[in-house]
Length: 214
Figure 1 (cartoon, one colour):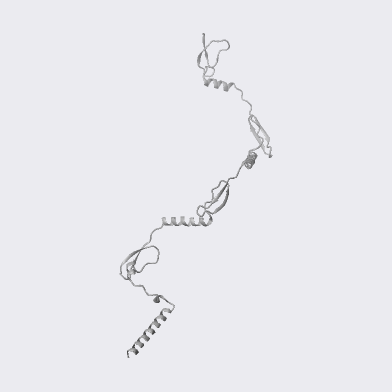
Figure 2 (tube, one colour):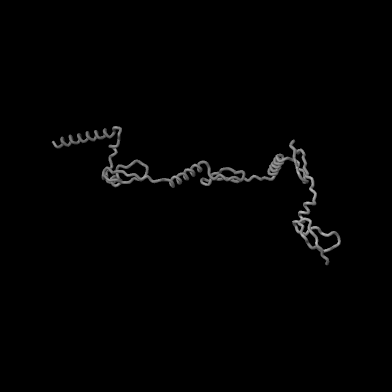
């Protein structure tokens, strides 16, 4: 095998090559030299620019390259796509129908059309459930009110829990006291009338007892 030396016309380096028929190589064979030689020798092609009118409106469509021709502008394409999707959905869509019932009282709430969330409760049960949740939430955030009151009978201080009227007598003293008669609590004059009748009855009884003794 015969070999010879030559100088690369891109990088100016000396390389050894095999002697064959034909013209001697002028490149060293490196990828960088080959790509650079191709870039220098290849002729640039003219850029293809096309302009045509939109098929649906009067807007001009500018297209570069040699691909297929775009018939419509961007806005007309989006409108056509929406129209085609709506027509396809109208032909193929089957609406979903589901029965609805109240989870608390079990009453019928009608048929639900579509894929939304089912109604769980009727209006009355919804109000009751809302009040229940509100009470539970209020109990979690409730702070117990503790107040001190003075008993008027035993003259001692006690603690009262809650927001009601402040006590004046402790429970132990209240149990030991005798309840007041109902006549004394009547404020419309009936109590006074009954007391007068009782006095008259006592006077008549004393008079009859004195007459009998005599």
